[in-house]
Image 1 (cartoon, rainbow, N blue to C red):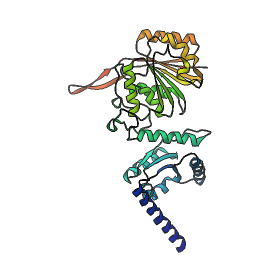
Image 2 (spheres, rainbow, N blue to C red):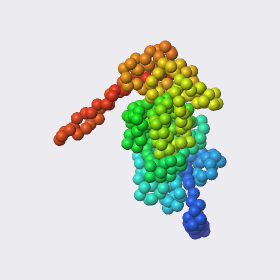
Image 3 (cartoon, one colour):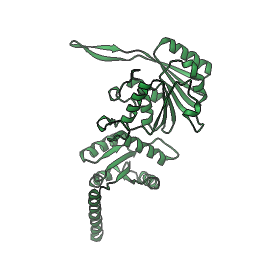
Image 4 (cartoon, rainbow, N blue to C red):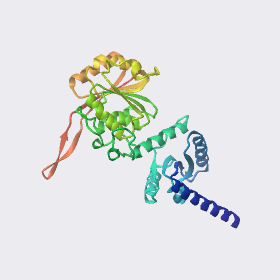
Amino acid sequence: MRASAKAANDAVNDAVKRRKRERRTGKQRRCILLLFSGGSSVAGEVAKGIAEDLRKRTSQEVKALSLAAFKRLASEFAEFERVVAVPLLLCESEVSELKTFAASSHIPCVVASSPFPDANISKAILERVREAEICASSVATAEGVEESEVVSWRCVSHGIPDELFLRSKGGLTRREIRAIVVSKAEVRGGEKVLDVGTGSGSVAVEFARLGCEVFAVEKDEQNLEVARKNIARFGLSERIKLIYGRMEDIKTEEILSDGGKFDVIFVGGTDNLEKFFGKLVSILRQNGKLIVAAVRFETASKALSLFKESGLHCELLNVWLSKGKKLGAGTVLAPSYPIFLFFGEKK
């Protein structure tokens, strides 16, 4: 027993020395941490198996631990440059406990969302890790964006606050509308998304944060520049490709050079919808989603006709948003324009 205790103590001392050397040489490490509830040995074995697979796919360290073990080894993880914790088998209260503990222990820990069930779960985890690191990034990598302008929005829920975006002259798709659009798109991560009339780029940013590859089309140069800045502010320049021009004039191969099709198409700029609606249907994959947002009655009527003619199964949603606003000593509801949302699926 004494021998094993001495060996454990020596191992800890060696680890501390190694960390000190790494700090002196600037070679601090990153770690992917797979967390599971401590009550199941089976869960632990599964997580360790996934960790072993991930080690072969990435240069980062990968560890599988129970939440209790993570808390016991807090000092070790505090020495990492960043820890991305993936709560594989933690309930909501345990995830909250993890975040609180990491913050109080000064562990540079970013909590990713749990991966969806997937045949290739290691790939799904890496997508969540990348997403989490993008959200937590504090350094701008895009040209023309100062470090002070970078947005650090760590929540993984839909609907980024409006005030975090620069506004184009075409306005901004509101937070609540974006949350509905993304939810209805039902993405798992990895889908190809086309955003037509991207404007400020807010919808493109929402999809890119979920791991989608986004192609954003904009016909106005000033709007395009605002979208470019917003995308850079969120550290998503590598995930979103901006395309200048009118959708009706853009050739399909200019958007998707690999000849593939889109999983989701969102149309926020609805001018001349009838001129390119047929093209959108043709580049939408089977079971793909086509979503159109309209403000004007005339546009909504035109969209409804086009959906019917195309044979797409269509759901119509009318959203009326009113927000509380102070008036004297009381509160009133300040209404905004109602939005018509069309959700079509290609069967």
